[in-house]
Length: 219
Image 1 (cartoon, one colour):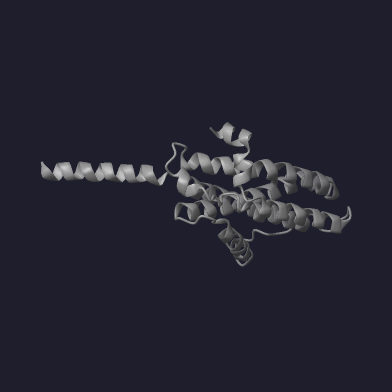
Image 2 (tube, one colour):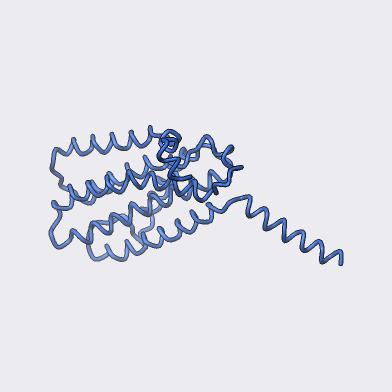
């Protein structure tokens, strides 16, 4: 069924492409403004990663979600299919951006910079998808609208805790900071997985438990 949705074009038509196109246009404008040069590799890559993340926040918007609730295709599969579509756009774009910018960094630092900034982007994407998935779970037809303020609020929080800095320049604190980013990624992934649980299956389990309790009480 997933392949049929992709092959027929229904998946692409159901995804809100305007945020993707806006994000891609913003990335192109930013790259053009730099005209092939940069004085701040980390800063530029963070801006470009933020633009990609914000454009991907609307991928879980689904006007047909209410109709598909009755289908045998589970909520988790529908969400993963949309996340896969976003990843198919973000991953190649980010790879090209890294290939464009990392040569401007010192040779000894490129690997650490690339891995660290990729972890930051992965954490940001997972956070906004977790927020959108919970929005979908609670009845928001277009939860993408809440992902932008949620991500910006998270980044503001990350910059306001001096005891645990996260948005830092490359240096001695780079690895500890990105271990914290990895923790954010793991927590957000767990929240996302919890949001993917099918509400119907939860209701069935609770109903079965209630029925079993009622039988014991009657006996």
